[in-house]
Length: 281
Image (cartoon, rainbow, N blue to C red; front, top):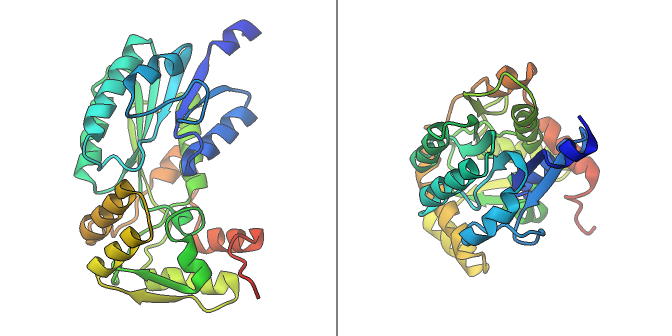
């Protein structure tokens, strides 16, 4: 393949600065693939709420990794995904990889849109990210030494964002993943108390889990100045998805990659070693 062709063989990574997108971009570049980051701060910019921004981002693109912020469960997500898939088809894209969420009927509606597009597709249907405790909404709780969430004792098999990125890159760059729904979980079901115990062990300091009422949690998040859509999605996730429906393990990582997923304890040790959770003495 000459350099000219390579330049026009671009993979678009929507949410390319986000938890999984950033990791997908790093891995694709490491493998020598031409990558375009789809974000509002990129050039050309990509904005889900501005369809006129999409065409410039799709020029010369052959494959796309689709993440919808903040979540496919959001009202309006299905319309946006349908419009993006239509635009992708018009631009001759060959392969779509969609990041979806387990147990979310709205997300599954978005999956069907991608599946019916008559383009090669792969769906990655993910459990909750381990990285929520180091790059997301809950990092301050870890730093404060108390996980204050309305999680009860519902088990969840947290998945590492590195594993999601590895599956996405395989689906974007290799044969054999088309038409697959990879439901990806970690290797272990964990309650919030289990999470707190693993975090305590990794950081060497006591981190408690305090189960708080749902309403109190949501008003606390709202009062913290979090964006409205973040408040909405946390309300949705804790009131709807954390009801036990996802309390089982799946083999998506092993099917896609031929290896087991990373355990939360290993994630916690790595993050603790990086210093992200260091608190002032």
